[in-house]
Each structure stands twice: as structure tokens, then as C-alpha cells.
Length: 136
Image (cartoon, rainbow, N blue to C red; front, side, top):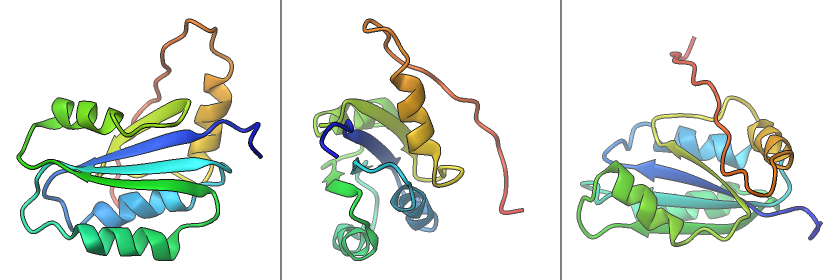
């Protein structure tokens, strides 16, 4: 399995406790065999970092090789929070999304990894269409 690249998924968060576990679950259910999950909180009020860490440890599969919970000491804003989270990335590829978003199904990371593998060596990124939806 070591010939499969590590894929980093970064969830950024600020004051959205009502949705963050759904975002985390959408990563934990991925079928890609080597995932690093980084959760970057931007100094949210009443943030339960210990609860999140315990939740990930309890629910993660063998494919979640590394988990990092990073919390900024003060609110930096979205872009600086993303940049701070990049310091922890160990994977060959990275997917960012916000805690009020979800990965559509359990194959999203695998599909991104497959498409990223097709890029030329000097290729920097790919993008995907975002579809706005509610629970229905």
C-alpha cells in the first residue's frame, strides 16, 4: 500500500459546531486507502478540540493514517487559516473544504487522486464544480 500516495484532506472551520461532524464524517467514509485528515479551527468560540479528536479516533478506519487538529490562537480569516493548515500537510495531494461543506460520497478522494495523477509534472491543481444543496 505504500505505493499509493498519501492524500491530505483539510477541513477549515470557524464557529459552525452544528455542521462540523457531518464534514468530518464525509472524510471518514472515503474509500481512498491513505488519507491524512487535518482539521483547522480559526479560533472558534466554545471549540471542543478534545471532543473532535476523540470522535475521529473512535470513528476512523485504517485508511486514516494521520490526524491533525490545529487551532489558531486568534481569528486569522479564511485564507490565512488555509495557509496555516498547509504547514501540517504531508500528503502528495491536498483537498480543502470548509466545515459547512461535505464530500458528496465515499469515492470523492479516490476520484480526485485519479485525476490528479493524470496531470503533468508541472501541473498545479484541478478544480471541481460545486453544487449547492440542502438535505433533500
